[in-house]
Amino acid sequence: MLDRSLKSAVAVFVIALTLGSLRPAGATGRPGASAEAAMLRAYTAYVRSLNAHAAIPAFARKYGLRCSACHTAWPELSAFGQRFKDNGYQLGNDRDSPIWQNNAYWPIAMRTTPQWHFENTTKQVTDAAPAGKTISQVGFDLSGVDFLLLGTLYTNITFGLVPTLDADGTTGLEAAFVRFDNLWHSPWANLKVGKFELDNLLSEKRFTWLSANGAFLYAYHYLPVGTTNNFGFGDNQIGAEFSGHSINSYTRYSVALLTTDDGTPGLPSGKSMDAMFTASRAFAMGSGLGPQRIGVFGYLGHRPTAFDSSGGAPIPGTGSANKSFLRFGATAQLWVGNLELIPLFSHASDDVALGTGFTQKPTWNSALLEAHYVATPRLMVQGRYELLRMSKQGDPGTSKTTGNADAIALGVRAYPFMFSRDGMALHAEFAMTKTIGTVPLSGDGSGVDPVTPTTAVWSRSLLLAFDFAF
Image (tube, rainbow, N blue to C red; front, side, top):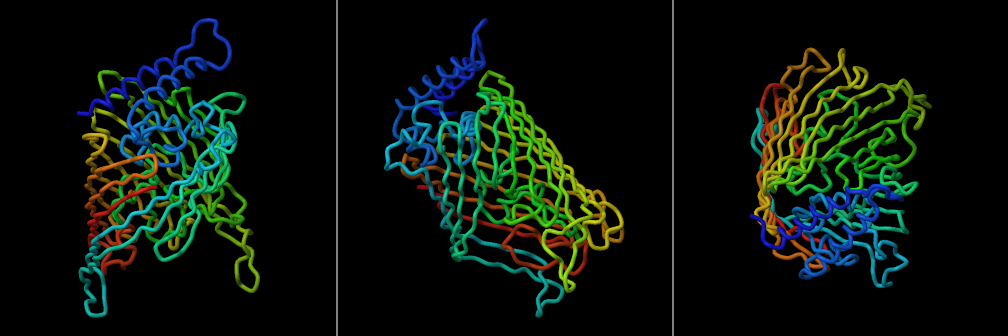
């Protein structure tokens, strides 16, 4: 059962959401605005009365909240955390805008994960073993560093900037966007422009998984054998997103137009655009069940299949003869006491022109069930099972089972402390993936396909880590 402090926080949160959804007869102004303000005052007063534990450090230092205010188990968002994010990382008080902040405040947190891990892949062809052998790697390692800069530039103007530093010294830019919140004084109208994560209920960026096999979803990244497509649903994309939500974020939607290079900076290779939509609805069930959310998502993408050339080399930006691909599905977030269940189903297909040797459209389906048991605010046990099945290969001569995948992951996260300046999770995880005819896309990042297209390849990860932010 949840401890006493978290039960009290949940009670205040439920009462606040009820107030936020009411509007007295004849009231004027934004629907629920006065009730929302009362909600924020009540909740803020409560969390400030608690001990000095805080959420992700940058926002903890800004608002003085503890981690359980916005997270079920950091970095996963709670219902209140989702609402805070939807509102542009604003609580609606005088701390929202940087002009009211102490000059010493800097909206940045840094996250890294020193770790020990073991990786193992079967059926690997080598010079000494042409039929394949098992290759293992083990040792201490580093994850690199994420620099998390998120906050407000001004009232209702949000920014996000996530530079990364890999363990080998390579730098990158995971996200960079500006968001205009509450346009026309309405939570139903928000505009984000830049590079950002696609808005889906199951986020790979807020994963509580860290291993090479565990922190990877086939539903988001799989592409059929022989494809020329480079799309990854879990990759951050570049474009513009228009989104909205109800006062308590129980109802949410987003529509995005995105460039066609899978988040690669620079002008796109073609002149078409990709489109993405999501919609979800949460229902307050009572009896300790918490809000139950269901959602749908869809992505219509395009890739050019012809280019103008000079000296035989394609000229960037001249792509034409665009062909489409489709991803759509449904997901949910269900609570049964302290147990959170996240099922997801998706269907995918690519145009026949988006592959080498394709004579028909490849199609495939994936399904997963993820479970989190929040034993206490400082201890979470988790598991996930995912499967992917090909319905139709692009090349009819390819075995129908080639590319099929099964993945399982088990883990535990313990949080010994989370203060306003820093926090840490002790993380243990085991994950394994089986693929047919191909080397797993997850795993240690190296490997070759097996000798035959019907051979099963296993990839396994065991990881022990210190996951901390400051």
